[in-house]
Image (tube, rainbow, N blue to C red; front, side, top):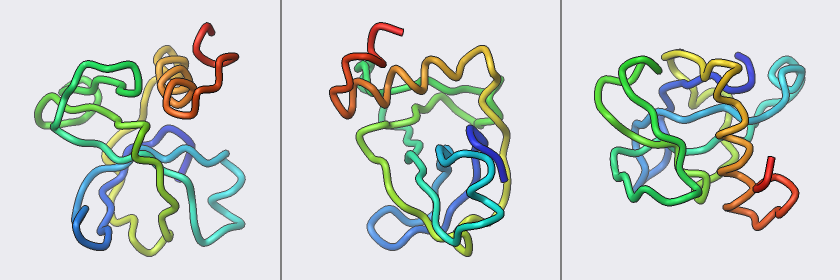
Length: 109
């Protein structure tokens, strides 16, 4: 497991089985039992807290990382790796988290 990987997660209702984007730092996955992740959804609103994903990102249809829906996920709920956000798109994720948390210093980066 690594930061910016996309995994299938079995989450409690109402979320259920869905892909998530891992956000915790790389060394956390060997030390901790829970990690920070953002839910991925097919509900696309074209707003600043979203990062669009598609087939090139390993997704079967257009969807978004919804950075308004950050959660802590237990390692046992992560079932299968899907793909990873390429380094060239990491700033999109940081910017979306910045908008979600109103962190001005991340919005302009």
